[in-house]
Length: 203
Length: 385
Image (cartoon, rainbow over all chains, first blue to last red; front, side, top):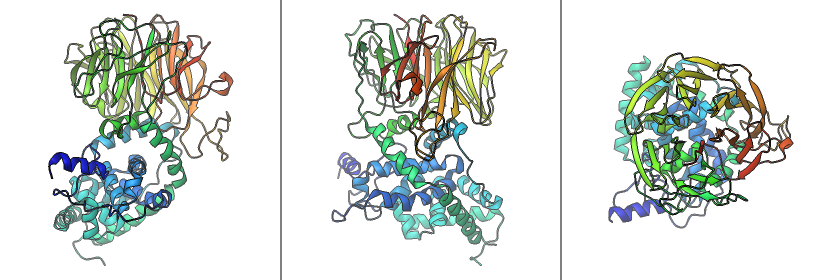
């Protein structure tokens, strides 16, 4: 399949955002994308229960990747993307993987974060209460996650926030399981060093 | 403790705080209007007004068309406004336009006849300013600063800047035509209209300097200073000297925006915003306007102050909004007799409601609504070419 046809297919499937690669075509051979591919048979699910189920997790994911100040904006923007494409996204096998991926991309996009930061600044006056502060060592942990390279940070956040398996992280990120293992291994090594904790299995 | 233990505990706390903070009903209430605003194709109805359109190219320099016959000056007086959906949609729209939709655009609106058309866009347009002779329009778009000549449709790219990435920016052409002031994150810069940056005159560490406006003699600038979460309004000489605070810093629950120096130099108008608390029944506690509980409402007032800081007066309460991405804007007519506003809607006392572009006399009288579809953003009243 040529690039043009592939691009058209991706657009039709709602997988191309066209910004900074927030959602990419997941397969290069034109076959069904790995995450959230529509199977053509699935009944669309209603949006509201999906939003209720996923929104807290998206906010947590965004907070892990870009901090509390802009996380709500980022999560809402990802949910808005899902809302606008819901007729397509709802037919995916894993619509939650799609919206999580979009959220992770938004949260690690400098452009998106700049925009959200600007909006947050503009609303500072009317923000009723600041987000609750995390325990300091936990906040330090997430700060170190944010300092990781983009894909490592995404993989680590998906792993820890959602407790996803390697296979599910690969599905969500749109990459191979091997790539996820590499990202997680490198992220783990850096976090151990920077957070000053021992290298070992969970106690 | 292992890294897995730390990660597990940190994630648990993160999930708990997120679950406690998220009000999904509010999110659901926001999604539909936000989606509608993004995909809406606007039509502008202005009774007794004339519109001019000149479509320039989209950001990459593609040349569009001039709706009015090329080479003819725009009818005047006219008001150019950023006719978009607010920065949230601007930025998203620049990179993710809905199929067949129009995300935002600049239109020129005449106050004497009744049509409106797209001038720039659709796309990300963060700020606009007319040249003093009214023949060129400087604007900030996705890659940086551009200058459009509406009569020809030709667009020049002046240069890239980080100012195009966030909504707190601004551009202002000096009345003497020599400089274009550009608000670039924490800096206020002067650029040459021919291209190239001249110099940085203000730097606010850890803050934002934006929405600049020139004094009519081109010797001073007023701008919004936002630092440490507090808003203020500063004045500085064009050479960067004598930086002084004119207003603020305001209490942390108040904001201001869109300072505009009057053409006669005697006053600076600006919008001051204060939180408006929404009652549980979905109406604002003080005004009775409809609102969504939990949304960050702001009520805006038009303020006037002398450039020396004296005679601060509140012209009137302008309106209120529940739209998180609504950026109000204000500008003077070239002759200084009127002001234009993009606001969520005046108070019930003024009868008119709803968002839009309004024009009023400089004393606040005779307010009238020109356009119902403006969802915030900068405006610039065109000098008569």
